[in-house]
Image 1 (cartoon, rainbow, N blue to C red):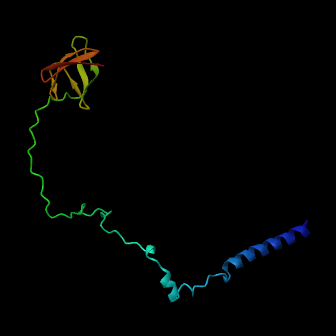
Image 2 (image 1 turned 135 degrees about the vertical axis):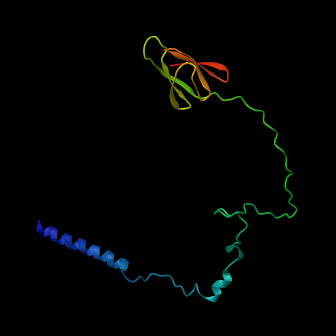
Length: 154
Protein backbone atom coordinates (compact mmCIF):
# COMPACT_ATOMS: atom_id res chain seq x y z
CA UNK A 1 0.00 0.00 0.00
CA UNK A 2 2.86 2.38 0.82
CA UNK A 3 4.40 1.60 -2.53
CA UNK A 4 1.40 3.18 -4.30
CA UNK A 5 0.80 6.11 -1.88
CA UNK A 6 4.33 7.54 -1.80
CA UNK A 7 4.69 7.94 -5.59
CA UNK A 8 1.16 9.40 -5.88
CA UNK A 9 1.90 12.00 -3.15
CA UNK A 10 5.17 12.93 -4.90
CA UNK A 11 3.37 13.25 -8.24
CA UNK A 12 0.71 15.50 -6.72
CA UNK A 13 3.38 17.77 -5.14
CA UNK A 14 5.17 18.01 -8.47
CA UNK A 15 1.95 19.08 -10.20
CA UNK A 16 1.21 21.69 -7.50
CA UNK A 17 4.73 23.16 -7.70
CA UNK A 18 4.58 23.19 -11.51
CA UNK A 19 1.30 25.19 -11.41
CA UNK A 20 2.75 27.66 -8.90
CA UNK A 21 5.93 28.25 -10.91
CA UNK A 22 4.06 28.49 -14.21
CA UNK A 23 1.82 31.25 -12.82
CA UNK A 24 4.61 33.27 -11.18
CA UNK A 25 7.27 32.62 -13.76
CA UNK A 26 8.32 34.90 -16.61
CA UNK A 27 5.70 35.29 -19.30
CA UNK A 28 7.06 34.97 -22.80
CA UNK A 29 3.82 35.18 -24.78
CA UNK A 30 3.35 38.96 -24.54
CA UNK A 31 2.35 40.97 -27.62
CA UNK A 32 4.92 43.28 -29.17
CA UNK A 33 4.13 46.78 -27.88
CA UNK A 34 6.64 48.53 -30.10
CA UNK A 35 4.19 48.41 -33.03
CA UNK A 36 1.51 50.13 -30.94
CA UNK A 37 3.81 53.01 -30.08
CA UNK A 38 5.00 53.74 -33.59
CA UNK A 39 4.06 56.93 -35.44
CA UNK A 40 2.31 55.04 -38.24
CA UNK A 41 -0.28 53.69 -35.80
CA UNK A 42 -1.51 57.27 -35.07
CA UNK A 43 -2.51 57.78 -38.71
CA UNK A 44 -4.97 54.87 -38.60
CA UNK A 45 -7.25 56.48 -35.98
CA UNK A 46 -10.52 57.52 -37.58
CA UNK A 47 -12.96 60.23 -36.47
CA UNK A 48 -15.59 57.80 -35.17
CA UNK A 49 -13.26 56.62 -32.40
CA UNK A 50 -13.86 59.72 -30.28
CA UNK A 51 -17.02 61.39 -29.00
CA UNK A 52 -17.76 64.81 -27.61
CA UNK A 53 -19.00 65.13 -24.06
CA UNK A 54 -22.39 66.71 -23.41
CA UNK A 55 -21.88 68.83 -20.29
CA UNK A 56 -25.19 70.72 -19.97
CA UNK A 57 -26.94 68.20 -17.71
CA UNK A 58 -28.32 68.80 -14.21
CA UNK A 59 -25.98 68.32 -11.27
CA UNK A 60 -26.82 64.88 -9.81
CA UNK A 61 -25.65 65.93 -6.33
CA UNK A 62 -28.31 68.59 -5.80
CA UNK A 63 -27.01 71.97 -6.81
CA UNK A 64 -29.27 74.99 -6.45
CA UNK A 65 -29.77 75.61 -10.17
CA UNK A 66 -32.17 72.92 -11.28
CA UNK A 67 -32.95 74.31 -14.69
CA UNK A 68 -30.72 75.89 -17.30
CA UNK A 69 -32.40 78.97 -18.68
CA UNK A 70 -31.36 80.03 -22.14
CA UNK A 71 -33.89 82.84 -22.52
CA UNK A 72 -33.38 86.25 -20.98
CA UNK A 73 -36.97 87.38 -21.52
CA UNK A 74 -38.39 85.25 -18.70
CA UNK A 75 -41.34 86.91 -16.96
CA UNK A 76 -42.90 85.50 -13.79
CA UNK A 77 -46.58 84.63 -13.75
CA UNK A 78 -48.82 87.31 -12.29
CA UNK A 79 -49.77 86.87 -8.64
CA UNK A 80 -53.28 85.61 -8.06
CA UNK A 81 -55.19 85.69 -4.79
CA UNK A 82 -56.49 82.48 -3.31
CA UNK A 83 -60.22 82.37 -2.81
CA UNK A 84 -61.41 82.20 0.75
CA UNK A 85 -62.45 78.75 1.84
CA UNK A 86 -65.79 78.42 3.58
CA UNK A 87 -65.49 77.13 7.14
CA UNK A 88 -66.04 73.41 7.40
CA UNK A 89 -68.03 71.56 10.01
CA UNK A 90 -66.31 70.80 13.26
CA UNK A 91 -64.93 67.29 13.31
CA UNK A 92 -66.37 65.06 16.02
CA UNK A 93 -63.62 63.79 18.34
CA UNK A 94 -62.82 60.11 18.60
CA UNK A 95 -64.98 58.72 21.42
CA UNK A 96 -65.01 55.14 22.77
CA UNK A 97 -67.17 53.91 25.65
CA UNK A 98 -65.10 51.44 27.67
CA UNK A 99 -67.24 50.68 30.67
CA UNK A 100 -69.21 51.71 33.75
CA UNK A 101 -67.89 52.00 37.29
CA UNK A 102 -70.62 51.79 39.93
CA UNK A 103 -70.37 52.68 43.63
CA UNK A 104 -73.76 51.42 44.61
CA UNK A 105 -76.94 50.44 42.86
CA UNK A 106 -78.67 53.78 43.53
CA UNK A 107 -76.50 56.05 41.39
CA UNK A 108 -75.65 55.69 37.72
CA UNK A 109 -71.94 55.61 38.50
CA UNK A 110 -69.02 56.88 36.47
CA UNK A 111 -68.37 56.15 32.79
CA UNK A 112 -64.88 55.24 31.62
CA UNK A 113 -64.50 56.93 28.23
CA UNK A 114 -61.63 57.46 25.78
CA UNK A 115 -61.86 60.83 24.03
CA UNK A 116 -59.13 61.50 21.44
CA UNK A 117 -57.07 58.61 22.88
CA UNK A 118 -57.20 60.09 26.42
CA UNK A 119 -59.05 58.10 29.04
CA UNK A 120 -61.29 59.91 31.54
CA UNK A 121 -63.90 59.14 34.19
CA UNK A 122 -67.04 61.27 33.76
CA UNK A 123 -70.45 61.44 35.42
CA UNK A 124 -73.66 62.67 33.84
CA UNK A 125 -73.49 66.41 33.12
CA UNK A 126 -69.66 66.63 33.09
CA UNK A 127 -67.76 67.95 30.06
CA UNK A 128 -64.37 66.98 28.63
CA UNK A 129 -62.95 68.23 25.28
CA UNK A 130 -66.28 69.86 24.37
CA UNK A 131 -68.08 66.55 24.94
CA UNK A 132 -70.86 66.56 27.57
CA UNK A 133 -72.17 63.34 29.06
CA UNK A 134 -76.01 63.30 28.95
CA UNK A 135 -76.89 59.70 29.94
CA UNK A 136 -74.92 56.70 31.20
CA UNK A 137 -76.13 53.10 30.94
CA UNK A 138 -74.39 49.73 31.26
CA UNK A 139 -74.34 49.19 27.48
CA UNK A 140 -74.31 52.73 26.04
CA UNK A 141 -73.79 56.42 26.74
CA UNK A 142 -75.39 59.50 25.22
CA UNK A 143 -73.05 62.47 24.72
CA UNK A 144 -73.52 65.92 23.26
CA UNK A 145 -70.98 67.63 21.02
CA UNK A 146 -71.80 71.05 19.46
CA UNK A 147 -75.44 70.63 20.53
CA UNK A 148 -75.71 67.32 18.67
CA UNK A 149 -76.62 64.19 20.68
CA UNK A 150 -74.55 61.10 19.88
CA UNK A 151 -74.94 57.57 21.23
CA UNK A 152 -71.97 55.21 21.73
CA UNK A 153 -72.20 51.53 22.60
CA UNK A 154 -69.63 49.29 24.28
